[in-house]
Image (cartoon, rainbow, N blue to C red; front, side):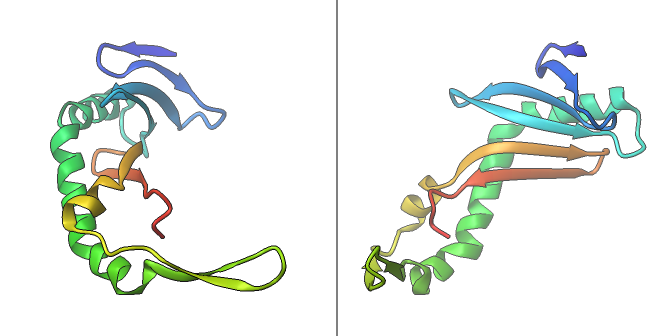
Length: 130
């Protein structure tokens, strides 16, 4: 285990090449997984800290891309579906189309993976839109 001022306690998972930490972002706990992938753990931890220090900007950029790439798909049919009932029948569910602001608000950052010094994965809860 090691401690980082921004990331807090960093623990080693069962796989010796995976390290986990939990930090607070927008009043929520976010888990970050750090995988050195052949790089120095200290360097990758510092890269992870840099990502976390810029997370507000990265989160907003990611949400902008999500809205740009996925809102039309949702509004074009994913908002309507048939839901199976206990008696075997189906009812049609038709949710309203969402504006860009409404759609973006449905996505909440809930995890980050850092692999090496070049790969950042942000994971989102999509409020069951898809």
